[in-house]
Length: 129
Image (cartoon, rainbow, N blue to C red; front, side, top):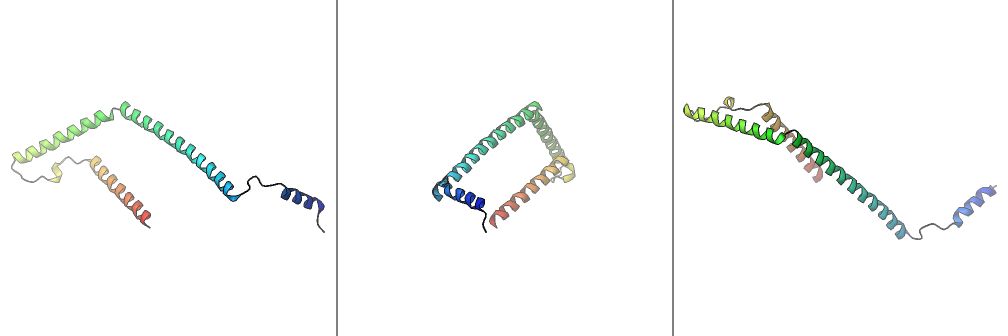
């Protein structure tokens, strides 16, 4: 035996028309809601990127990194010229690796660039697959 209250509830639910009459209208409504959400996300991510960039630029300017880098570069350049002039004055035609001012920073930079190259290569290979 069936429950009359269940049948009445079921009849009431099927008697109400659905809010959208066709699949095309439903698809357009869903796409519009998704597009609207992505537009807002793009705006928020872009605004966060701009704020982050401004903060980073402020930190670089506040720490005088540009002047420090220029001074370090000038010092290294002077030292390389001095070593090369010294070697030429002694009549040696070759530069020895021990005489060049290669510090830990140079080695870390080379290692970092190599790691970045491997990561980019791996990303390219993953895209190809």
